Length: 146
Image 1 (cartoon, one colour):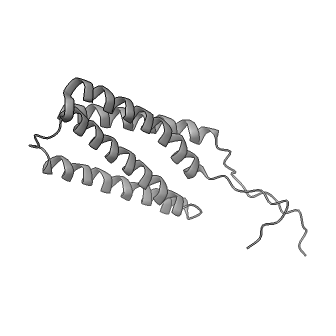
Image 2 (tube, helix red, strand yellow; image 1 turned 90 degrees about the vertical axis):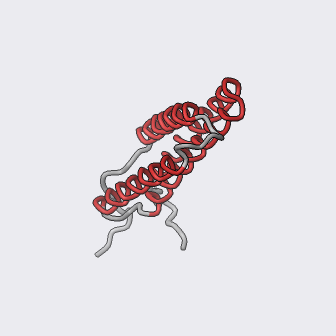
Image 3 (cartoon, helix red, strand yellow; image 1 turned 180 degrees about the vertical axis):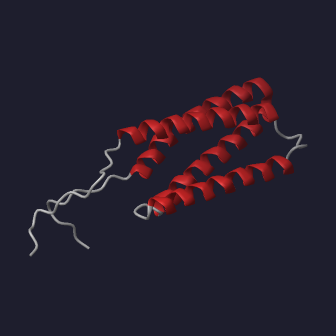
């Protein structure tokens, strides 16, 4: 499939949000892991590293799912986003129940890391989305059809 020479490429807001959220999330995760390792040793490392992995993986999975749904009816995309969010919350709930008595991680390191990494990623996604030029209509074609 070849594109026309003058064709305007549609922006990819989900790709931009994925890139915009990944960098601050990973940076904050690295800092949080280092801080909690210094403060609480291996327990802090385990809690912080696990929270970082869960938050980053769930954020990436949501953006990839939404990216696959791009171009569909906005109601379908919204439904997909809500279903994805529901399953992430349920998965986190199951995780918290299964590991509520885990003695191999610091629950404080886990909680604080999950919050700050999630906030950093969300802020990065918002900033990236505001910089994407999303078209609200299709550009007219340069060729006239009869």
